[in-house]
Image 1 (cartoon, rainbow, N blue to C red):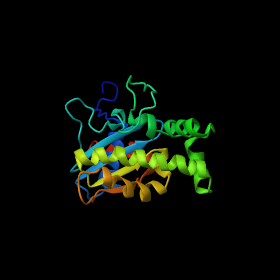
Image 2 (cartoon, rainbow, N blue to C red):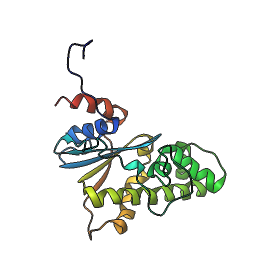
Image 3 (tube, one colour):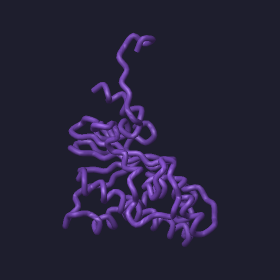
Length: 201
């Protein structure tokens, strides 16, 4: 601020992503948007009525370091805990799961490509991923009950997630009907930067 001679606003990248997609992206018009980044790590941001929810501890939306129900392979996350959502839903987590099961070492994008081409092992890995993502997002829905969940990050480009995950999360959600929509980002890798600009709205 001293150098620029103007006020500076700073926010978490996942919060900026969520804000961009809530204001004029995939979640436009929704009251509550949960933005998810599935990439090298797993992040999240919450936007309510066009405003980022920061929280008392400035960690609102940080779902990646909650434990994933039904999973614990003994691996310790960098945060010091085990069974973190990030260990299973990040790109490296997907690759590690495939390697643990098949001994084949492929990056996440290649696993998705091979699954689409009919590779049974890669398809099985993505099915496990979809089950885990469904369980993790069901926990968010049970607490936050968002109108829309928008996915971003490299793994958000796996199109089958948008068909399969909503078909799986219902059994984990405390409701007979689930109106929450799972949507792909509209602004891609630019959404974080756009959200930073929207902090001035």
